[in-house]
Amino acid sequence: MEKSKVYYTDMHAHPGYNLQQKLEKLIRTAGIGDIDFTNKFVAIKIHFGEPGNLSYLRPNYAKTVADVVKALGGRPFLTDCNTLYVGRRKHALEHIEAAYENGFSPFSTGCHVIIGDGLKGTDETLVPVDGEYVKEAKIGTAIMDADIFISLNHFKGHEAAGFGGALKNIGMGCGSRAGKMEMHSSGKPFVETETCVGCGSCRKICAHDAITIENRKASIDHGKCVGCGRCIGVCPVDAVNPEWGQANEVLNMKIAEYSKAVLDGRPSFHISLVVDVSPNCDCHAENDMPIVPDVGMFASFDPVALDVACADAVNAQPAVQSSVIGDKHGYHDHFAAAHPDTNWEVCVEHAEKLGIGTREYELIEVK
Image 1: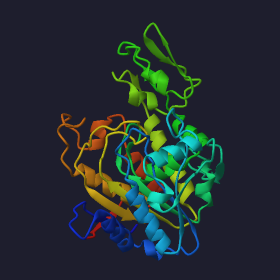
Image 2: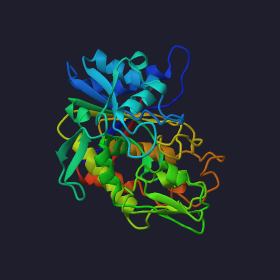
Image 3: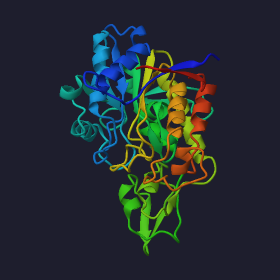
Image 4: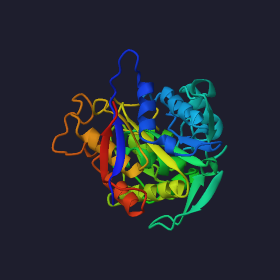
């Protein structure tokens, strides 16, 4: 397969040429104008960030993309689907409020916010996939109704997928609440009782009442647990752990299969900003410091090549010594250092197998 073109620009700016202008030049040079946007509805898939988290993408970047789409004749809207876990984005009313609180309003971005799977996360379109794990993906209806799909991604670490980039933003992000359950359901965490201190953080974060505390020890009812993994992230003593085996690998393959459902049959374009590379997802109501210095902005028609190019760029950076991976030696991969039980390569390999794109890329710098 021929190498895909991935376009890149760094984060340097100077008087008269700011980062928003650089982003516009990047996506125009990468060929976004080759898409016919005339009077087309355009879904710009973005993560609005859980309130309390400050590493999500600034809304200024979303405005730049929306402005370009409008200049090309399109009708853009910002979108994401509701979450499984306790937080401020589990139904559309709170989700929109959270988006506005974090700066994503029609007044700041120039386009509306539409929650892809509706008020309660049940507004979904069933999309045939016939994948290895998913036969019929459950995608937010507003996203599937769009004529054109654009992913605008904050590239960062992730406690289950290894990193969150284009494919994670597309596959997991566009799944309805039932779709997210399907992707997560193959792996259920467990509690190491010897380590557990009974603080209750895991119980508070669980949206499905699957966790109980008895005698200052937590336990998880796997009959209620959906495997979302939020309890893993909040445990202050690392007592909650994922199942050993291929659970995270299956999750990554399901993400790839859901991505195929979203992308097939319509034009798409993908943008990733490798800045504030926090070790965990922006779904957390907090963010740890970046694990590497800021790298730059990337764009491509190929989300697989884009994810690999961004991962390579991150791994070419030195680890920030005061970050969570600063004292972890012996890893060739920064994401494996942050989350040793993950393997992000499974997702891109499976996506390539599904025909979404290729891991082989040509990196083209835009000044």
